[in-house]
Image (cartoon, rainbow, N blue to C red):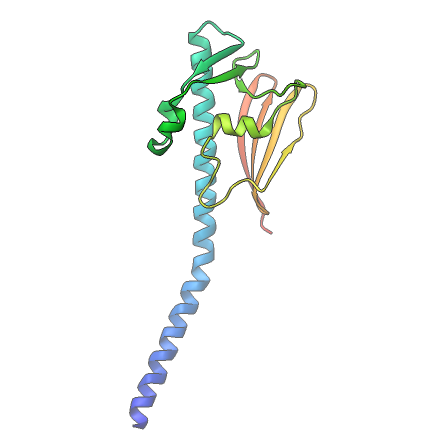
Length: 166
C-alpha cells in the first residue's frame, strides 16, 4: 500500500514538473509566433501597396483607379473583393486613403492595404494618426507591446513593426 502511494506521488510530481516546464517554455514560443505573424502581415501590406503602385504605373498614373485586388486576398475573402474598390494615389503612386478634410484616414488606409485587419487573434486596439504636413504616418497598436507603423514620407512608402519588452 505504501509502495503504491509512493508511485502515485512520484507520478504526480513528474506530471507537475512537466506541466511547469511546458508553461515556462510556452510564453517565448507564443511571443515568437506573434512577432512572426506581424512581420508576415507587414510584408503583405508592402506587397499590396506595390501591387497598387504597379497598376498605377500601367494605367498611366491616374489620381484614382478602380481595382479589384483579388489576387492578393485569401480565398475566404474573395466574395468581399468581387466588387471594385476605388483607390486614390499619392503623386508618387502609392495608395492612400484621404478623408474629406484632406487628412489621411488611418482606418481606411489599413483596410485598403490589409483588409484582413486581424493578426492571429489580435485586432488594432488603438490607431494613431501622427501625420505632419509633409508626410503621412499611422500607428496601429495590436497589443501593449506590439505596434505596426505605415509611413509615406518623401515619396517613399514603408511598413515597420515595433516590439517593446514590457
